[in-house]
Figure 1 (cartoon, rainbow, N blue to C red):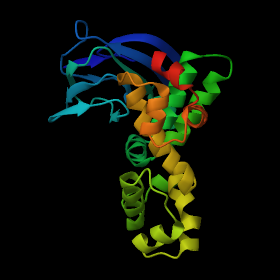
Figure 2: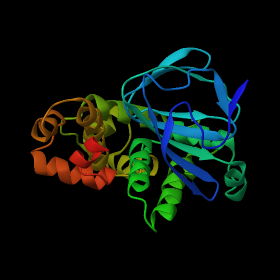
Figure 3: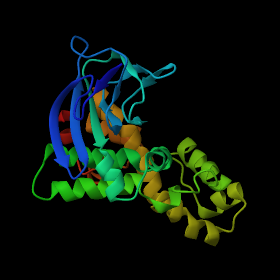
Length: 264
């Protein structure tokens, strides 16, 4: 059985930072140079696809596209079968000392990540910190990771989330360009508008308006990386009033300017 030691991946590690039990890496994958063997890792890690994509296999083969996050427990077997050219991932490896120091466990981290609606933007902010590493990046990466895996509302109650959460999320994602009122969402969820407005931020960590902006920015991520559209075209495609509004919102949510993200 092939076991990768800490800091090693199927692709080429182009940036690595060791931060108090966290090994944060940017890893590039090329069709002519990646390890396709079945393997596992010494430590648990989570992996976020920034660009490109791949076909991977655990028990079954599955596609990993830009914006996807995967969690791998220590010793969990998997295999990279095929990669798009070029592909880039942010990998965050969590040593045993990290879990012990912050009173977390593997199961908590895995479930919290899968349930966290903010994971894409938190990972992009971590990516930004890795690229612009300075004296404040270490603490910033730690805090962003804690936001990703340590949110109390996901621990111990992940199977008991109210049904209205899925209903609201589905409606907002199905109608990203439509003006939505509290009254509409209240009818869908059979909740009082005041109750809905109080409880929405507890689970989504933002207002309804902010969440809709995040949906639009989420849509723009792939377009920026993989299309030849201008920023104006992307802004209009994603439902923004104009390019300036799009740029301001993108910067606020991701920490990047759109063209900076495209070049990264």
